[in-house]
Structure formats: structure tokens, C-alpha cells
Image (cartoon, rainbow, N blue to C red; front, side, top):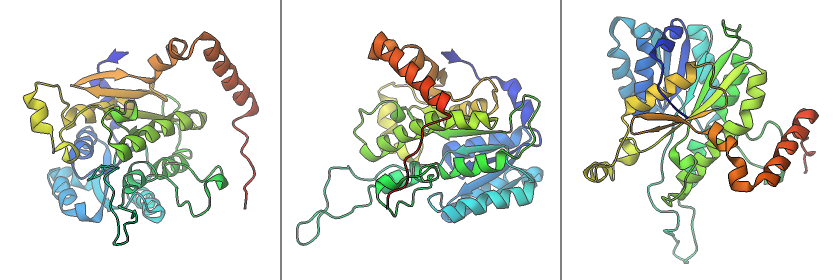
Length: 324
């Protein structure tokens, strides 16, 4: 369903504290500026190499710069993410909003094989995209085999920390304790570009949204997503000008940031994802759910509904015992 972001929601930001990962540049920086301009405290969480850009951004805020700070963080590192939240709470008292925005794309094609002198395939670092975009923010030090997952071994680090601290916040006037926005991509729903690691990671972010929204809701924390279409950033620099020359629509970073703010503030949005395409906004999760029978058939759709009710009655999916 298409909608227009509501600027009146911005009045809710006064005195709130927002963390934006990947906040020193691009979409993240636009979100930082918009949160700050509406009265929120903002935390720019980014790599230490981004500190000059972050400090320049904070200085541009003028007399209100004390309401902003930079925290160097590698979002694939659990201790770094933990320090991000404790530093934020130490300075501002609480965390109200978390935007999991940091992301990267591979720099060579997945099936462009690199080999050693013996002609054997070598690790070319392709999995780093998964590490940053999904596992990275995930608690994913998978030192044991895949079948040893437990309830605590497969969650977005930013999301886990956000929910951990937000669940202790006093509820606001609408009864919510906090808000998390996961930044995915149209690549989280479609996969035709053959950018294997990036598409896989962004599909994973949508899976993270769907699998976490129910538990977060019970804790009175809203979890939503944003799925931007083509937006001129570092990731798209290889073809942005050619894209424009074709007359194809693009977002601006401000368009996407506007969608992020709306999803973080609209209390009617819970477990939803906003497509931002050419400056238009459309919620994706409800239409997909409403049309499930059209793509899996009425019989299977009803079976899935009954399966969902089954697991809700059980209080969730019973996890298997850990295998050594």
C-alpha cells in the first residue's frame, strides 16, 4: 500500500536518542541530520576510518553539536557493538531508536574464482558482505557446526542489543518502549542482479525482520524495515550516471532517510517494510501476506495459517537440544 510520510510525526523526536550505524555518510548521514534537526540526540556509529567525516558532520550541527556524538564501531565485533550501546546510555541516558543501516557490497563477482599457485580455490573474502550486512550485524561467531544453533546464536547484534536495552525503557504515551529499523534493499525481495553476496545478505535482513517482529512486539518494541531502490551512494557509483542517462528513477539519500524516520516513528508500523523507489513509499509485507493464496494456493495458504497458530499456541518454535 502506497503512503506519504507524515512530517507531523517528527514532533515525537524531541529528547529521544537515536543510534544510526553506518551514519557517517550517505543514507545514514541524512538520517542523522533529520533526527537531529527534529530534536533527537544522535549517535553516529561507524568505522574508525570514518571519524573525520563524522566529526565534520557533527561540527556542521553548530550550537546543537552536544546532542550528537561519534562512536567508532565494527558492527561485526560483539564487543564493539556492546560498547556502542553502553557509551550511548552513559551520555544520553537511554536508547529509543536504532537504525541498522551499515552495509557493503562485494567488489568482484561471486563466480570470478581466485586460485593459488596450485590451482586450488582460495577464500577471496566474498563472505565479508554477509558478515557486515547480516551476520554483522549478527551474533554469528559460528565456531561450532551449523546444527548447534541455540536461541542466542543467530540474531542481529544491533537488534539484540537494542531490544536488550529498550525492554527496560518506560513505555511512551502509545505504550511502546523503542523502535528498530533494519535497512534492507529491493535486493531483499528480488534477486535478478546476480550480486550474490549482497542479494543473499539483504534477503537475510528481511528474514530477520519477519522472524523477530513477533517477539519484539511482545516486549513493546517495534521492528520495521526499509527497502530502498537505486540510490546514488558509494555502492552504486559504478553505474549511477548511466542509470540517469536512461531516464530511470532514483532515490535521493534524503528520500530514503525520510522513509527511515517514518518507519521509526509511526506506531501503526510494526513488522512492516517500506519500499522507497523514485521518491515513492509503499509498504510490502501486508500485500505479500494478503496475496499468499495467489502464489501458493488456497489449500497451502490455509495449512500455513494453521501451522502459524500451532506454533503460537506452543509459545514459539521448540528449539532442539544442542548437539556436541
